[in-house]
Image (cartoon, rainbow, N blue to C red):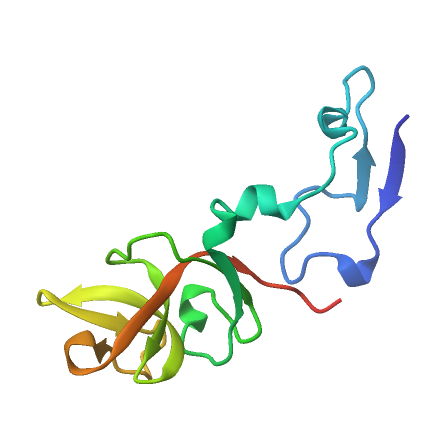
Length: 146
């Protein structure tokens, strides 16, 4: 069955125009199976998608703005895997001089650093501090206010 839905003006993309002249969308295709039929009877479970090693995984809620330019915002939920070996470019959860941080592991001039995505914060040289890596960030879950 095909249904026509009108997009309310308040939900229309702004300032971009819709790619077609009408504000009507047709949903459903006659004669084709629904993609949802492949998932009938299955339970929706993000663990299957986001957690590769359950025994080595924990969640961490972000506080602060140091990683916002990298898409990690204050209040986001991180999926952290303790079983992975950190490599340059990985985002890490680490205890640095007693403070829990989320930073990107980088090599600058062959020296290891923890760097934020925000240029207001200087990179932290790992040779000058006590650092315990808690894990590598696998995923970021960002919720929108609704």
